Amino acid sequence: MAGGLLLSGAVAALLTTALPTQGPSSVFDDPPPDKIVIDVATVNGSGCPAGTAAVAVSPDNTAFTVTYSDYLAKAGGNSDPTDFRKNCQLNLVVHVPQGFTYAIASADYRGFAALQRGASATQKASYYFQGSPSTVPRNHPFNGPYNDDWQATDSTDWAQLVWAPCGVLRNFNINTELRVNAGTANPDKVSFMTMDSTDGEISTVYHMAWKQCPRP
Image 1 (tube, rainbow, N blue to C red):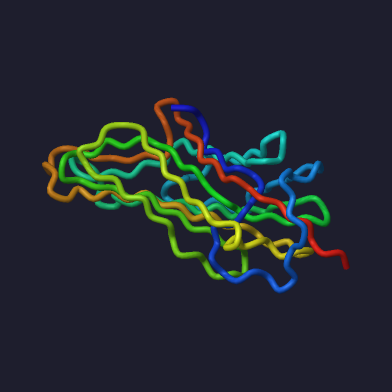
Image 2 (cartoon, rainbow, N blue to C red):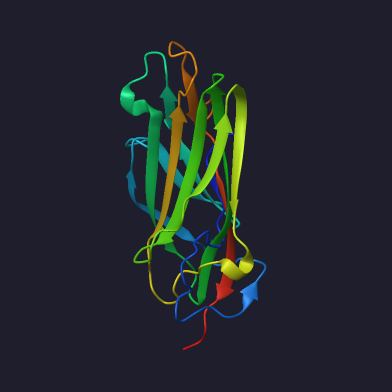
């Protein structure tokens, strides 16, 4: 599979909370020319142990990439009881060009799953700005038998996008989870789901939208 968990960069939000009081105005098809800087404040979770997740911004400011190398959930066989669920929370500081704001419009997740007959798995994600309530998680179920790459897409209509507040730096949180249920599968056989690939990387793409903030 292609490398890196790609997260596209014009953050058109997958959030369903209310829009900020001071909302952005004009809509732009293209991102602003100035550079976006994304710093990782914290990375926490069993799916992203220290040193196994990295974030990079695309040169054209239209995406940012989160690469995972150890994000795997499994059940059955000699799996530990806690292996069935893995999660990761990314807390990102997004510095955008002055006068602009962003939201996440869609996100494409990819990985690999090997599910025995009778087993099942779920990929889940939610998104929110610091100080705002978390959105209702988006769930994508998979059922065995399954032995292939997988892809899931979260998307939000333009009218329902939630934008980062203008003129205020708010950290952006991405919560993801993989869960595997052995179900009625042979308990001696392992079922698993990864958000990575055979070369240790997988891409999740977060597609971003831009708006210009109101002038003071």
